[in-house]
Image (cartoon, rainbow over all chains, first blue to last red; front, side, top):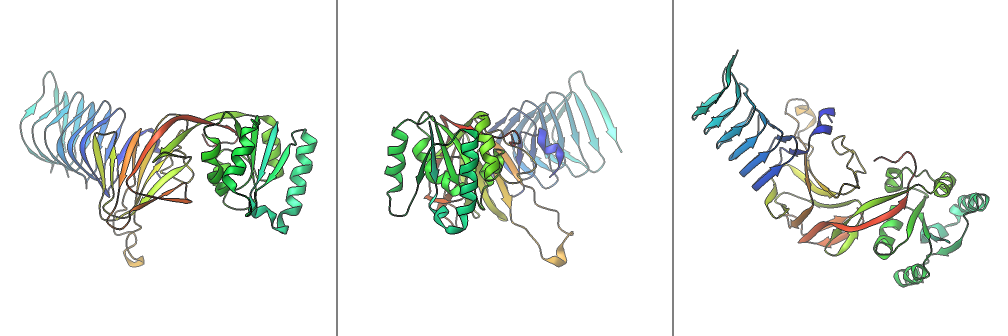
Amino acid sequence: MSKEFKDVETIIGSTVKIEGDFKGEGDVIVEGGVEGKLSTKKNLTVGENAKIIADVEAANALVAGQVIGNLKITESLELTATAKITGDISAKVLTIATGARLDGKVSMESSILIEKE
Amino acid sequence: MYQYIYDSFLSDKKYNKVLTRIENRLLDLGINGKTNRITLLKNFESYIKELIDKKPDVVIIVGNDKTLAKILNIVADKEIILGIIPIGEENVIADFFGINKEEQACDIIAARRIEEIDLGNVNGQYFLSSVEIYGVGTVIICNDSYEIKALENTEKLGIYNLCLKDNMGVVFNPQDKNLEIISTPKVSGSFFNFGKNKPLIKGLIRVQKAKILSSQENNSVLVDAHKIMKTPAEVTISNRKLKIIVGKNRKF
């Protein structure tokens, strides 16, 4: 397995679904499903095949999968070309790749907008 | 005072030579003690309880993982130090604790490097390494706040205290008062599909408390790879710790 997993506190695997209020302290990777509420004090990575139906809070987030719910990111949010967001997002730094879908309001107080090819 | 407990499988003649070598090494090191042989005729539990009631300082198990599993619930509540002399196959736990086989284990016991290890509790019984359930549809309620549901393509969900096999390259700390839940996907695809489908990814979630409910296919859990218990299974980290002699090559 990848060495990077050694620093990860939680990996929601691709064959499981979490339902309820999930609170993480460290880095969280989602490859499966989440329904309810998802928050972490550190970094969140949402894999290409992941589906989250929940309000999400994290320090930084990289989203390649689907999120139905509001994303409240205190620092940086990156949406890759495969990301599909239905909900409002807030972040200080926002990066959106060509092909990403976003249906919702964007709030960026004292922040920078980066357009990524 | 050292008490040595020999598992019943060691009564087989093929182990005579190795037992003699071990006993000679213990004598050389000055840590020989009373030898207690488990036989099929003795009531194992009451025999070990009687032995433990004599308050030995150190109890040494001579056998394998199954021997440890058999004795764990009898010794876990007692103020003793546990040691292992592994013999034969199925010694994954001893290996995790950095204990070499046979005579080499005697030197590790003589060095008396002692660590306190977390113990898990499942439905009131102690466990050392794992509680596993196979099958789709398994639900685990975690920390009373969320549920993990095993979807299609899940082979098993396991709750681990010790990391005995390759679990995502992560070594779980058996002293951190956490349990790790691992979701293991089925090995998917035929030979002809090899490399075409994206590999399914294992999951890792740390908890302190979990309740395993039945899956669609299974209503029992496998504890420490040897014991079967019915669901629902309440799994927690115990306040009790196990004092165990470890080697310098331990994996934590």
